[in-house]
Length: 292
Image (cartoon, rainbow, N blue to C red; front, top):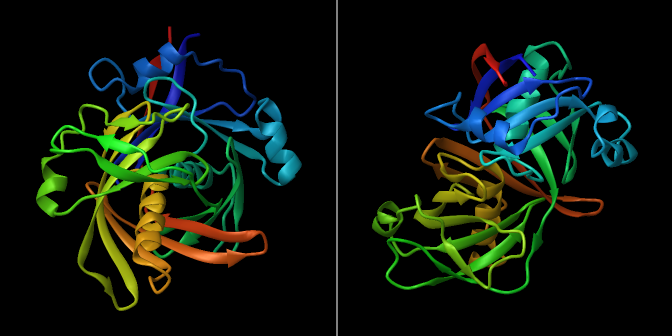
């Protein structure tokens, strides 16, 4: 395996190495992914997005069965090389890459179905860049206790599944949020079998302004560490805060993360309530790297 072309992209600072492999010819090992994402010895990123046709990857069969028009599959890997189900920022960057490279078209008002390991996700343009329908969400059983460096005592967390697992923890103040040391992974008790992303959140003052909820959060991503943003984590955070706030809480939210701001909207669908994430996607530069 020799020189491979790549593109670097990000969504609110959550950054990715994008590698086009339409016919599924690359077999990236976990070690190669980890080197690509290493910020000292590689390109540097929170994960790798392999752009592959659904028909060319085994995991794409389920996507095509769900939606025959889901030509493209987002093969997402965390920075440590582990396989992930879904990435909310990543799929917007993925869609932006498809459009900019001419591999797909996305006209205003239309949708682009993309296969993921969490199912097919529909992407459309929005005022801030792109919006992705993350599909059905669910509240997970149990309230694990979360220990984190910088918190004097463990705090209860709320489990939310938006295609991948999250635990959301409410903090009392901006100071508590700022003083967290998320270089060290939070410890969950009981520990989820497959791990979880952990979000720490404080409400805005006031929580609701002009019918829109406002919160601020930081995140430690499974298989990555602290990131400037986590799209599915942003959605999970808004869902958890709405759940805590009660039935009169709004369904539109703005979530501030270290890398910027993202929008979340909950809406009814035929199969239940869906959650959508909106925000920017940018391509930064292109290059080649020797995978050998």
